[in-house]
Amino acid sequence: MDLLEILEKLIIPVATAVGGYFVGKPKEHAEVEATNVENAGKVIEKWEGYSNRLAKDIEQLRAIIEDLNEALRLANDERISCIRTLADLQKKYDDLMILYNKLKIELKQVKNAKHSTGNE
Image (cartoon, rainbow, N blue to C red):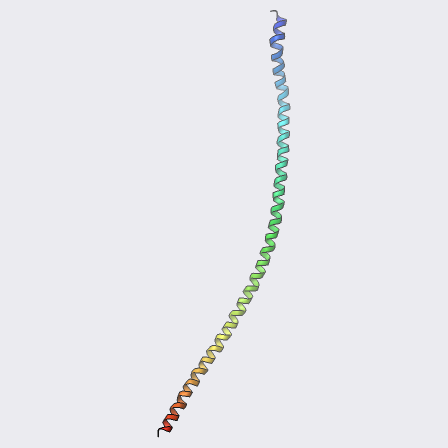
């Protein structure tokens, strides 16, 4: 075997393979990077969709909370009104009980006076 044959059969294919590896590696790396960028773009789009949906949900929840706060304020106003009405009714009841007890005492006095004048 002469030197030319050795170069043809062994060194040239090895050199071509090594050269192809070093030339192909940056291209493969660039393709991987392009795929990563494309995938990152898809992920960003998905998260953007999630973000928009969450923003709409938050706005709806804020509106619901505002409605509930208004209903709570109205219910609290009604509760305060009922407390005042109950206090007024309790005062009237107490006044009526005082009057009832006075009338009851007067009735006893009238009955006692009737019995004491009727027994003589």
